[in-house]
Length: 139
Image 1: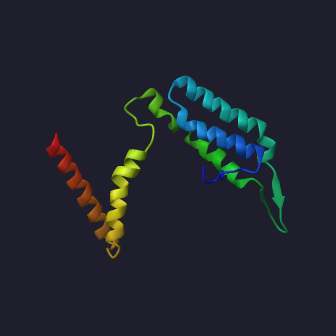
Image 2: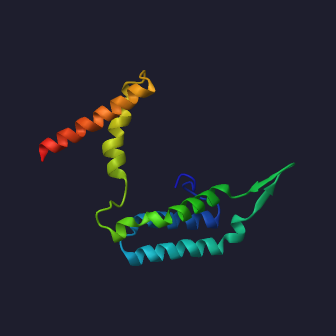
Image 3: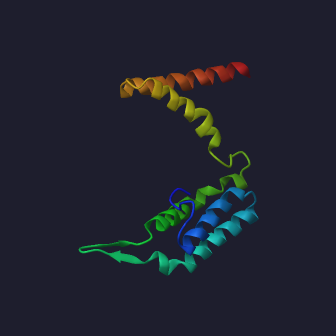
């Protein structure tokens, strides 16, 4: 979403933003298939637009680099995006990991900024081990 901006200036950008926004609503296999179809349809409709080039004095570059980047990201991620649809044990988002576990590790490393790389690694290992032990005692 960051690469698409809040208010895309092009029709292709607005359409792709809507497709990416709909990604969070996918819960079933039918919705997954419809989402993938909409992505393929978008890519087909805007293929010429995505191939547009800007020419400088000695080189050229793709005019719509960010849209191309988002398209590539989605195409490469597509095989793994919907694992949760077929396997209910897989969480839909990584929010639990990012907010629960990683945020505490980042906080620890921020508060101990002067540590060497080996010391930071030891700190993270200690934290994960103590967390594992405390959850084992609760059960």
